[in-house]
Image (cartoon, rainbow, N blue to C red):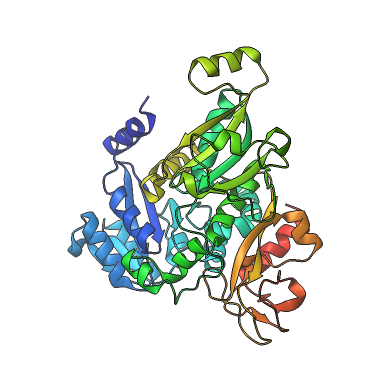
Length: 430
């Protein structure tokens, strides 16, 4: 019991610590910096943001004295700052993986193309890569995981995000010998595929969110990407294009997520799903073919079976991330990693008519949204994964609203790291 706190306390007693670089001071990065200040033997030594003042503010709010914070973009100066026990703030993301003192890099940007750059270089420099960037992981996670394995480091998503929380529930079920039939998340926001950052500007401001981030929540893209990550970890698929997404509740979920022949909505088991009625939690539907197990589940109040709900009514985002950090750095263990390969893809759908020559803008934009499908279909139809869209992606023909966008309709940035990683991943059949 209490292994994590006990071991971290022992590290602190021995003068040891996990030294971290955090990239991105949005809501997640800022809250993580504050949370880590409460934990023994975890030190935020470097914070990267394009606005240094945001990084300094986050550190000060976490309890770091401002006279202990020094800004530099120079490697040698950064090295000296850390050696003297100060905290470094920078706009130079290269310091995160180059500075020798850093044990692990944490990407809190949510930018898939930038995340691919960070992850690739971090792994090449033999540092652990902890990613809040599920947008990147869902697109090129398998090749990054393969690189990390060969480099002897950990590449992982976090426990506090829904994918990590779902996998945590699944591991719990697997550990008991139960079979998982459905892996699912609650959807926190309403679903409107055609919402735009402009329409959501005021709501985003009130929630202290980037309007594009809120748009990706409301238009469903974020949900698809998160479930994409779960597919790649478990080998599951959506039961239908984009999932069913019905409203359910803890009282009705078991019956709702049965096979059609048994009165439910599903064509198959071993699927991912989402439901607005279960937010902000995650849930799985499990079963057992053993009569004695079913009898005990009934005795314990789980119902008549043969299927049962296991429900975690929360996920705590960055607040749970220290558990992932500890496991990655100390135990060399990932929280969630795409061990099944690229099982599914979040492909691109036009929100409106797009004219030839327009840029697509990508996740959270007013032009496109994402829908989850199998990787086999994505490859067969040459569909465009939404995570591959960069600022240089543009339409090379007119695209009608609601069209599934394929590679023949667009020009993508072939020089971008994320594109090159995806090409390598496809060629390796990961």
